[in-house]
Length: 454
Image (cartoon, rainbow, N blue to C red):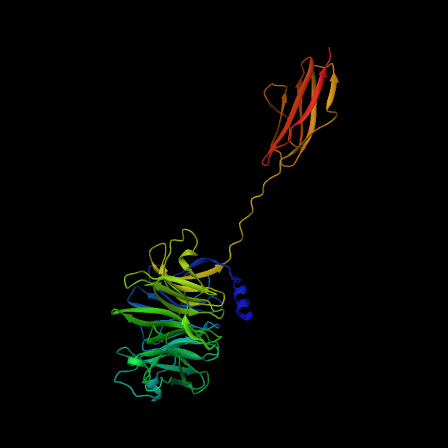
């Protein structure tokens, strides 16, 4: 792993080889705790873009959440539109999304504004009524990618800048209407495109260059497995994730992939058990990958995090008794925060924000040393008195001091660190045994011999 990537992991509290735990924050709906929530992306500071039900489930509004969670900021709609959605967010907090049929940007402290459509530019051929569009991602330079002219499941990828406006992204040779998913801070964009050179009319994951021509590059597919591939995310170092699909015995299967420009190209993100499908949905600059696995259409997906090649399932990293069921993970930032959708403890479909922390090591259990007993004065005395006051000290952790005269039952002395008691002596030889007691055990007994003369 490169030193820069190790530094990113350390900054996120995820030192090489460490397994973090997570706190989970509920991303609620706009002014309605019962509304469904659809978070899509997270930026460096933990702001989240997405959409929520608005005034019931009849419409949705684009939203921006703060890292503290709770109810989000309502980004509103354009004009008389009733629906808007948020899809991407950059570090300035500007949300890319849609309002009605138009792609929009919603900056912090500013009004939502339309980017227009490719139909406005007359740069490609359109079908009647082909005028839908949405902005899907925005980088820190303000460059936007999205899809326009959504009609009968047909989409055309676009690239937008403030200076040049909107332009169609090119398909692979002989293909048409590619789809785009994400853009990084270098202007590299990823998605999927058909091409005449591809087998069986399939599509492949595509990387569009950062220059003005935005030429597409075919990222291929996993050898011997898949003819179809689609990229879903790209980080700033240029690593791309997505999934491939292949069919066996009339059943379609999926394999999550990682592509990087190292000569090896595309490879599976991890090795999962046989029969387990996998999709990769996000990657941060440290190369941490999120996604999900499933075992057939009826199986609830299980969300994973891959750090330095190690697969961890997110449900194993939640606080004990969180009450959450996680359904999807859509984005991860460089601090390792993950945003997605799940069912909260109140059985509501809300967004979640997972924030990693490394638990402190357990406090070691200290074994206390046994106390040390010392009797003041000589160890052998001669007296004519029937009673004597005996004093001494015990060091260490002391909870009590007891004494025994001969074979008589033990009695408790007064005090602990400094103790005393009055011994009742019989004529002749008297043997006193004094012991200190503490959490570390008993002291070695101290003994005193007293001769009582007539």
